[in-house]
Image 1 (cartoon, rainbow, N blue to C red):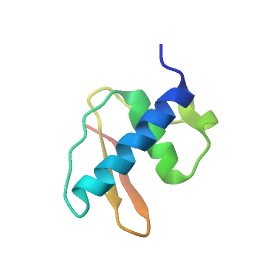
Image 2: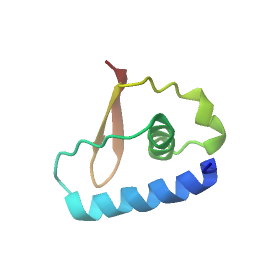
Image 3: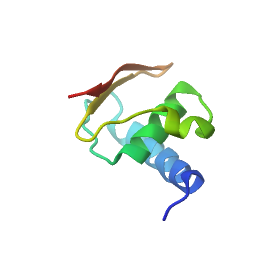
Image 4: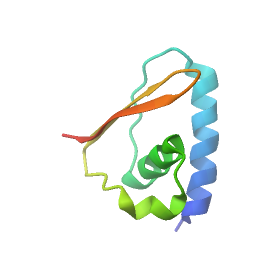
Length: 79
């Protein structure tokens, strides 16, 4: 399987591409829990060693507001 470090590289590339392509737009991104954990940890500026500290439920919704200067994680695990 994919290592957390490899997933991190993939998610960072994906994140940068959507920032460029969809700046100022509203998006819905559907994914498995692992990539969601990695994205949220990156947005928080947290270490990947906290990967298992975030519980992302099956079918849950996490909401992130992104501006030019910062990101706000407003919800995690809404169902």
